[in-house]
Length: 219
Image 1 (cartoon, rainbow, N blue to C red):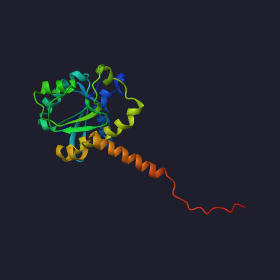
Image 2 (cartoon, helix red, strand yellow):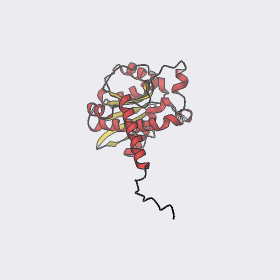
Image 3 (cartoon, one colour):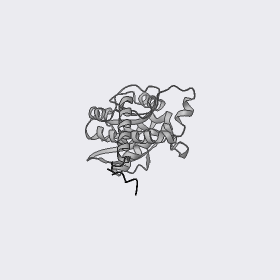
Image 4 (cartoon, rainbow, N blue to C red):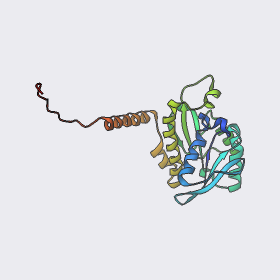
């Protein structure tokens, strides 16, 4: 079984904040595969289901971000799944907004939720999906990450969240290497995709050329 955890903060106050990218991506994944994440267990909202026939447990820790590891540790100890069967989705201030980074293992970087998970598990060799929400250092870091997503950010982040959900499913169906090849979005690729989409939109909006015969000035 795969355990897919989306990180965030519980409560309406934090619903649409940048720090809740993990929750939002997990919601999209749950909707796509018809999984209800509404059972309170392991200090988290959980839901069991299947992705292309493979059993998964979706987890949304309710401990608040900095203590996410308490929930994940309890889940892993109960199910005794190998560490590589844990997938964690979360926001990352250290990569540009709208980018997606998938890795099979690694450090927590500056993310406190991931730091707590790695500290309590004592391991970091599990796949993670990072949703970029920044890229520039800010003095008011806390205010920024728990701030609400602006209207200008929404479209870019929504597309990235959908890809994050798809990437999680791809890891389950195939493996993390395949997901990395398919879904890692770098700034240059993101820019090219955006430019391509804008060009296609312009083409669709441009009316077909119509041949017009000049009218007789006398008419």
